[in-house]
Length: 126
Image (cartoon, rainbow, N blue to C red):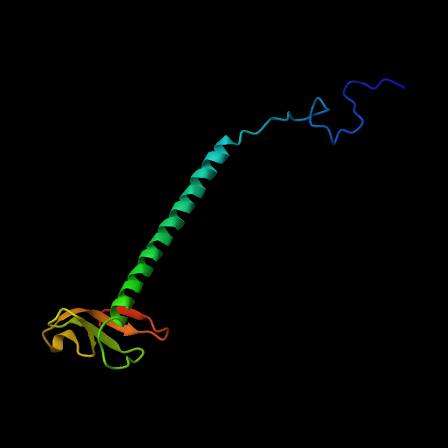
């Protein structure tokens, strides 16, 4: 077996170091800066998404409360989808639903509501 020169190897493509004097030096990359930037970005994304979900949750709870109030109010008619109705307090401080708008009489109006095709009451400006 003949001796090979020091800079010659059998399989240069599979060894983890350079085999040629002119080859670029292999250096370990410092990825800490990248990690820190990535952590900041992803945490911002999580926080933003969390705030969006929190706002959606608050809106859902508000919708549930308004629907509960309207469905538990007193009325003796079948509401029509798309029509605007008004919630009032009567003399006994009970809540009732009416077609009469607040400017047509002197009652304490809670709000205006419209029945959607999905049977949900939506608070509206009237």
